[in-house]
Length: 280
Ligand code: SAM
Image (cartoon, rainbow, N blue to C red; front, side):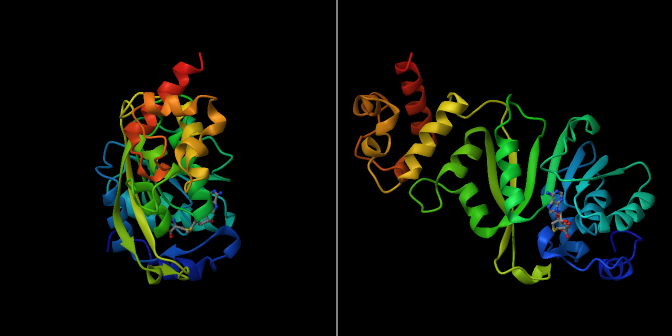
């Protein structure tokens, strides 16, 4: 028992929250598990937590029971609001719910630093938000850490290292300015209803400064070009970026015959800096 609220199965019955595919709903009903996910986000006692997609509130209850200073939860499915109101009443002044689409709502006015983001979201919304959170106009971003549930395969792409099939744009985008690790694996049966694939929770902490200097837009363009044709040698894959791409690659210390998968983060940053300076 992490709180005195009713079990989640009862909450779902009382409020008739049958999971809807259109909202990407696969609920976590084990409060011990949601408390574990909350703990994976680190010490919450002095932090505001932004939770996206609380649904019936299993993870929300975990976050509050673990001591979050405040939870701001954004939920698109208005059917969930009465269940969330009961949690609000059990934790006076610590839960604020915004009814809306997390892709359209700007929650920043309601949050105070330090902010931790925690979410169990539908796969496509989660990836879209991850990309937005990793590519703000200014760095450091509004958040200190992101603790997010993904389809296992996506989680593996986020933490991937050079030389693996999973290594690509997502790994480089995240690892350039943050540290990422998988903290929990979950089988389909952990969810109600169970999805088709396994899931994993990724914990991402921001670095104040990027690991290696680079311009975000140039780096993104170079990495995208490299991995769009990941089987080709870089001199061919990056041909469109500069008329003397072989010289640029050599200058950056990268063999023109290498493939995108073999180049580590430092190499990509070096290459994007060399290109940026050559374009002046
Ligand atoms: N966090 C709950 C849990 O762990 O049991 C629910 C998880 S369920 C996978 C995803 C939740 O995100 C659902 O409650 C769904 O209604 C909500 N959701 C889906 N798209 C959303 C969006 N664009 N903005 C806000 N919430 C969204």
